[in-house]
Length: 203
Image (spheres, rainbow, N blue to C red):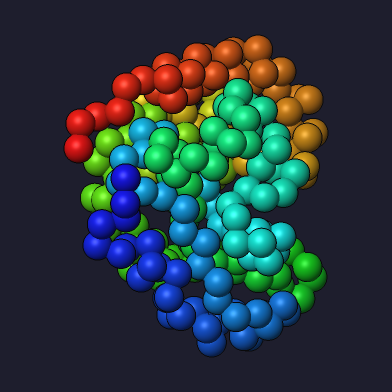
């Protein structure tokens, strides 16, 4: 399905944060990574691109993406099929690093500028996967920690799964919380299979 209205092109042309990014330790220019089409049935709501994604222009093009695809039970080809999967982070650009080399948070102006329009664009979404605390807080309105939000995965309503970020930094969390692998991932993969294998809605 084509991207009617050119919203993806509008986002890719955005330079609202040029001065903000120039002032970071990485001193980089904006490069919005917009990856969605109106007919997508699965929404991956993440945090923000990392440096590798900034360089490649492809979302989750890093070890975190490999882990996320394993969690979802999706091949790379299926994951990057924009006809079925929309990848919409809290900020479309790499926010940069601070002076200590830590990731900066997604700039709120990105969500305020684009998210209402993007969500209105994605009317066919049947399953939303929230990746990381920033996405949890925005989409669920929760202020509790990631562990408790993920632990209450059954309470978030039909068609929503809250996941930790698949970063290698969370490998210790995964070892401490074996219920995630034993309980959440089988249910998540079953939902993903059902949504991905379903028939397209009529245009």
